Image 1 (cartoon, rainbow, N blue to C red):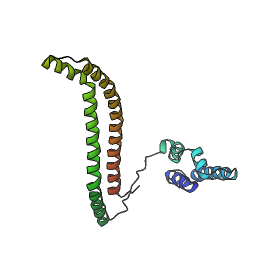
Image 2: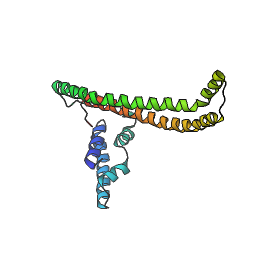
Image 3: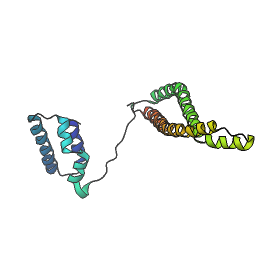
Image 4: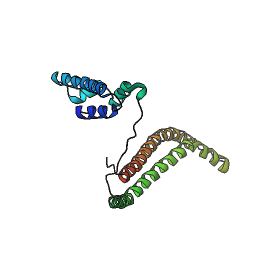
Length: 182
């Protein structure tokens, strides 16, 4: 946040103050910026040092503070919103099947991890059903437990990434429809 933005926010939020008080506080902030700039600091550094202008205004107003509603205006007309919706629909024709494919791959890996973890149970069922015992199958199924645990750990991170990707895609669609592109 630069000096102009900082002072603009502070000035707007300090509107309930008496003009003399508001002018005194704003001149103090202005002099703090001037002093910092003379000492080679950037406006952003000075603004960070001063803190949040909303909190500064809240402290200055004390019990006179009232929350001011923030209105976000859409920058698109109804026709613009229609075209954005159409564009998002065509984007979804590519993005949704892609995400379904990724989710199917994640579910397949999860099923593989579960099968590897429970492979000794399958060997036991085969022994009870057929009555034949092969030590190599038992040892192989026990080693699959380790592989299954590692795969399950990997699947956990894959699903976290898939959820984050889906949430980001849905939020992006909502922002586009509301008229905020970034």
